[in-house]
Length: 67
Image 1: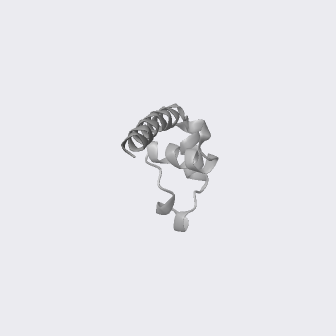
Image 2 (image 1 turned 135 degrees about the horizontal axis):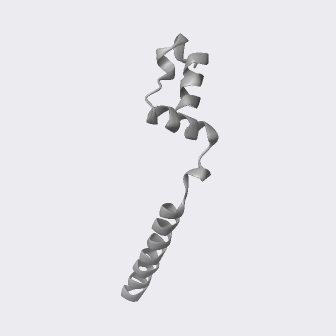
């Protein structure tokens, strides 16, 4: 029983390393487009909620393209 637990801990440690490696290699391109757009808006401090009940208007879109 002791050897079974030791083996399972070893396998768990190896799998944890593989999981962490996969998580660090995951790029932003793997994110949905909507999340990427929201991140861009946050980066430039453009708040969709500040205009017309949460919708972006033409002024905001022009500002985004300008930036």
